[in-house]
Amino acid sequence: MSDLLTLRRPDDWHLHLRDGAAMQAVLPHTAQRFARAVIMPNLKPPVTTTTLAREYRDRIRAAVPQGLRFEPLMTLYLTDNMPTAEIDRAREAGFVVGCKLYPAGATTHSDAGVTDVARIDAVLERMAEVGLVLQVHGEVTHEAVDVFDREQRFIDDVLAPLVARHPTLRVVFEHITTRAAVEFVRGARAGVGATITPQHLLYNRNEIFRGGIRPHYYCLPILKTEDDRHALLEAATSGDPRFFLGTDSAPHARHTKENACGCAGMYSAHAGIELYALAFERAGALARLPAFAADFGADFYGLPRNEDTITLQRRPWTPPASYDFGTDRIVPMFAGESLNWSLVS
Ligand SMILES: [Zn+2]
Image 1: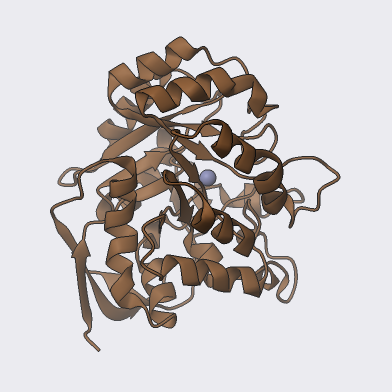
Image 2 (image 1 turned 120 degrees about the vertical axis):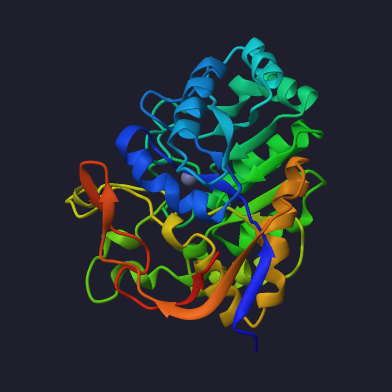
């Protein structure tokens, strides 16, 4: 087996960058590895207009370290009250690739999310007409539904009807976590894809409780069963172009994770390609990593594939216990544990 792996520079099709000093702290990790990333709009307040997206994009571009090239692909945050004219503005701006649907209350900063997708049907129709992609956080939020069942229920109650109602809308089912989601995407019409995170390929839900409650393994959608993990791994390594890379790297200051009510999200940007290399290698499918990481997402979004490359080397390294995070610290995935692949260039 070769000790070097050179692949087309990948893109991250689902990323949280936050803002200000926190964004400046985490952005270099992503920009060292990825050419582009789809930037999630769940700031406080959320990025609901093209004007806010333009300003946010300018702040991100200004924070890219010298010598690196990185293109943020912006998204708008859908609310019950988004006017269809905003979709036209987003399309005209050129730098907005889609709109993110957060069911109200589903995850970090989602209080302003959509309370009922029927309310945004006109907006979704306009998105389909102008070619914007819908990115979906696919979980129902009713108290009565078990946290482990929320994705599956969303498929039946919301996503399948939505995909049928809008037959030309391109939809990304973000950060899928279940066998049910894999099967839905496999059986769906053309124009439906899914991103898969490194944590859902590497861990099952036991990880949250191994030896005690471990807040750094808490994310939403929450880690699922070993059977679900196998289904995701099989999908990611199958060569099916509907499944592609999206880290969902979600930085939270350490004290907000190590807390009586800890935030949801795992930080993976510091090893955003290395973690996938580990998962694919363990599955005996390293040869399938380049297309998953660098080809299928660009093809889905109708964007050119990157022309330059990155190289990974089989050389163990250990992510630190924490990284700088503005005025705080952030605990990364694999903190203090050995990772077998390193980024060399
Ligand atoms: Zn996310």
